Length: 511
Ligand SMILES: [Zn+2]
Image (cartoon, rainbow, N blue to C red; front, top):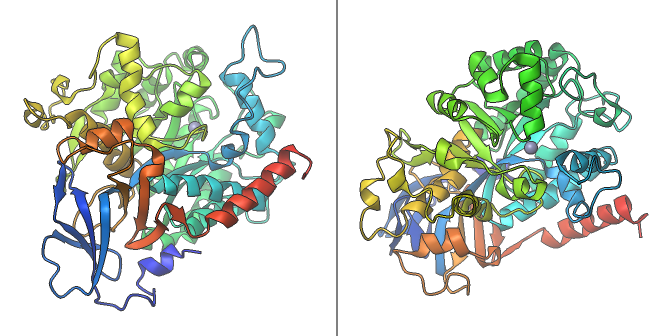
């Protein structure tokens, strides 16, 4: 197994302190475009020390022939355990409400699965999901974790047992994790907790905060190393009353933790929120002064233009989970209303939209990136809807000039920023861009893969964002340490075998 923490703090015996490693691909993505002839050079602690043509004196040169190197992607919204229901919810649900199957019928199936899993099962399914993420170029994940209690609804002796199983899974696969510990107190607006959610519920904010604080402290060493850290996730305005919501945000503010919350995924949720609070969810968060640059609103599909402005003004992030949203029939997020570009302090570009895989119906963050644009093309009967040329209203749209004649990759750069730097801002990861001083977290693609072959420096990023087959991904490095080589993870066979066994146990009586 990969031990990311050991690797990060420089105890990896394979690399003596002071030794440098140069990764030399055909092309490196620098944030503005691809460049050839450069090496990414990192130290023994896995930090990038320079990107340069000069490799003099470096004995450890790793040639990545016919490969292009890009910063690792950030999956800002995941529920790892939902991987067990992939392929099992695509038929009409028995007893689906009304005339059609919908999000709410899917949710019932998801609850059933959630109540079947032991702590070891949660480890196994989480490893499977994180393995697939790693193989697709994801090097950090924000895990929105709401399984806290036993299948019977009792507290475990350690109330963070299941969260720790998920963190262990990420460490063993070798990706970084923000464990977003979820607060959940009721089953719906003005509705007491139901039996189905018995594993999620912590009825009092004091219980949630005390358990979250215990987890935060237990991850202190991992936080220092950038391996695993905690954020909080008030599940939704549906699952918490307003007093509980305020308490969770207050706790997060004390420690400057990232806060993630599901917002406006379904019209029914918006209507019920207006009935309870007199405003829709994002407007409620704005009214309560809970939106800021540490807040990420997941989905934000059914919001008004005014709410989009409120989110923008607060520098809050919206995390769009397009492959999951299309699978659930949630609707189309108005990315054209929401999108703005931000130049970070270190000069890298981010947007106010991050991306997540959510229900794990598909784990392919580049597919999420391209859907951000494609859904709007289908809706508006236009092309290049999110072209950075169109972001005239964004005061920080500095890419505009670069998008004039001859620049083929402005739109792709923006979509790729959603998959990298924006996600990093959302979950507070040090990953997501190839900058000196940041960890060497990256993935490579085979430039001769049939899905992108023939692309040059000027159109390679566009080819990758819009057309890459995930099987073109060859090498994944986290903190200077390869976790995937030649398209395979070292523990892949064992992780898959354990997951097959779990699925047989859950759905086929162990056969
Ligand atoms: Zn979610």
